[in-house]
Image 1: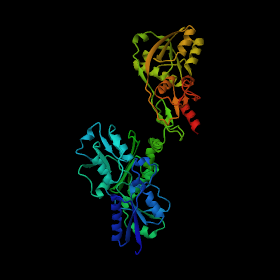
Image 2 (image 1 turned 90 degrees about the vertical axis):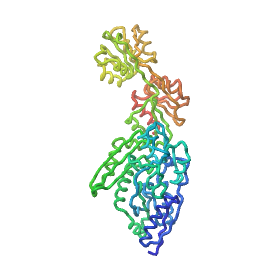
Image 3 (image 1 turned 135 degrees about the vertical axis):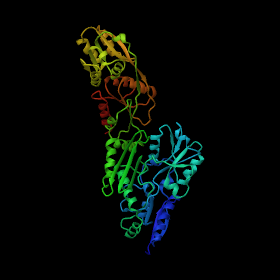
Length: 525
């Protein structure tokens, strides 16, 4: 045992405490050791949240390089900070017995703010932020970086913060846990939180064998499950992923969670397996989450720091969002709000011979006012196959459908039964259909079924393409935005309005949202 084992560590108080713990245990076994403090990138970059730095292993990279350069023999880490895949040539040598796994809320004065609508909590962890906002969606989260001591000081100095979240093991190990603190038992900790890990060079048998004597098997089993779960989800140590495995009565109990960055979406999993038959539980649990929308959540997190380049003026479904090419960072919102009007009963007293419906919004307005049996329409003419499908599901059979209002008007001038139609429309309907019918001596009785309200807002400067679905979405967008963008349009009528404002206007092959997405993808491939 004549070789001196050089122990690499960060130079924060907590990191040094952990390294000295390893040093003490090794020296108790008769090994000679030396501490080698190294400052890491994670300690040096304090001007932005950890999850925005864009790399994993931020607290371990400097020590990895020092080890590969043979400046140190082993490195001591908080295991939750270590990437799930170690650099080539470096291996896990031991995991010490785990400490407190919980997250802890340190607060000022009292906990009354927890029941308040407005409160401010500080944390630099995306996982803690997401879980807190999932439980307290009206609260505000402020970024908090630095070592444990400096974070506690920042909390004390900031009069606007109600509290801050810490790892219980961290503030407990160095004896600075305030009395004004509570463990957050409901918050699922980071994978391997509370555990200390030792790494060594793969070909350094002396150091590996020495550290193996410190290994705690139960902690190793549990943290391996948690880190395998994390790896399967393709999440770095900064993703909003929580995982905790415990061994009780010869059973492994596991719970995991994945959240969106803002905490609005959460997917959880729990599983229990007999000890010794637990090998697949991490993969099973991760796949369970992936199959329930986890892949999309991880993609959102992965690309969330990339600027938005495409904006949809209509909210997209999860399935539609999955259709975008990986180069597309899309955001969506409804730039048009619909408000159904009350349709007077006397307008529907007698059976209406010919009815025109040009949008799904008109269908919804009708069925909001009346049941299908009350809507006695003999002939229904409509625009769009999706509108047709909705009408036949909620009202009755459609006699004829066209892809736009002008073509429907042209059809009716030739084939309508009678000389009168009832048109259920919006307050800002286009003129083409009623004008063509009137010119051809067909009386048009307009009933304002709903109101269309512009609800647009200023989009990010990075947006270079916008998806439009009606002339009113174009009008709503241009009320708040004057930048030149590529206009991807659902149909010719929408494109006609877009051409008044944009030089590059493209029209989908068929009038569906999916076809507009396909058009966008063609541009970015």
